[in-house]
Structure formats: structure tokens, C-alpha cells
Length: 210
Image 1 (cartoon, rainbow, N blue to C red):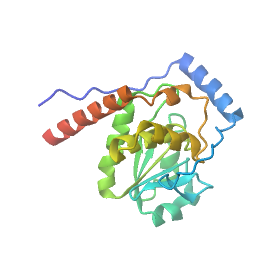
Image 2 (tube, one colour):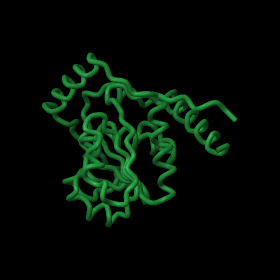
Image 3 (cartoon, one colour):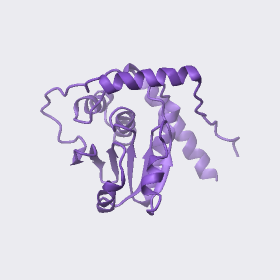
Image 4 (cartoon, helix red, strand yellow):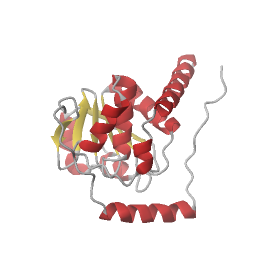
């Protein structure tokens, strides 16, 4: 039996808090990256509700911005059973909005400017495991950047998309991607994909022994 899987704790310092506030200010003023014309977008996520930035990735997977109680009819209609929340700040909004419903609420906070392959793998693992119980929704605040990266890596790892096409969907589809996050743009490397797959293999191996 292996030792405990390494845990990747999220710690935030005063300096990081200042950086976060500065970046959030820039984001509030930034214009989302404009969509470039494309003639091959039929395989991209399908729009469910533009107001909530809600899209269907596949039969069992959806993406959106932060939802509130007004979205309950949509959640019921789509048979969503699990919500994976990527927000670091105000991370309890899902609990406040949907705690009364029979939903599995998971918070796996990501710092937008410092995302690791191991964190991405852990989130993909939780998405995949919970899809056994029904549809899964993943979101951050805007449903654009952190959410976009997770969906892109889902495309690459589970749907065998190539990196360039997954990145194109993230940046060019109307989800509101902000080009200020250079680290997300640079995340799309074969090396990072291999790290994600290695971590997923580790999680699978340990799960089989439990």
C-alpha cells in the first residue's frame, strides 16, 4: 500500500493577496480577448444560456460562471448532480445558493496566476469520478479562464483533442477568455499534459487499492 498521496496545499500570503487584488482590478477593466473568425466550431461546447455563460461540453459535463439560485431550473433541467467550484475568493457562494438542494458541492480553489499540472489533474479526477453519478458542472467566477483551462485539459486528456485545438476553443469561443493571464496561455505544453496524466495514473492506482 503506498504512502499517502502528496497533498498540494493552497497557502496565500499578504503579498499574494495584494497581487490578487491588483490583478482583479486589471481584470475588471480588461476587455475579453476578441474571438477570431473560425469555420470549424461545431465540436465546441454548445450554448445553453449566454446569461450564465453556461455551455455543454459533452453529455455529462457543463461549464459556466458563478451561478445563483435563479439558475436552479437550469440545473434541474440538465440533471446536474455535482458542481465543481474553482474559486479561491468567495468560495462559499455555491453553498449559500444551493445547500438546500441535493447537489454534491466540491470546492477545489485555483489561484488564476499560479496553476499547476497537479492541481489540474486533481480537478479532472474529481470531475471524472463524479460523472458516474450524473452530470458535472465546473465554474469559476467568470467561467472563462480557470474554467477554460480545466475544460481544455479535459478535452486533451479524455477526448484526445490536440493542444492547439483545445487552446483555440478556450481563447476564441465566446466564453470571455482574458488574455492577461499569460501563464494560462503558456500552460499548453506536452510536458504539462504528461504531468497531468502521470498524476491521474497515480490517483487511479491508489484508488484501486483502497
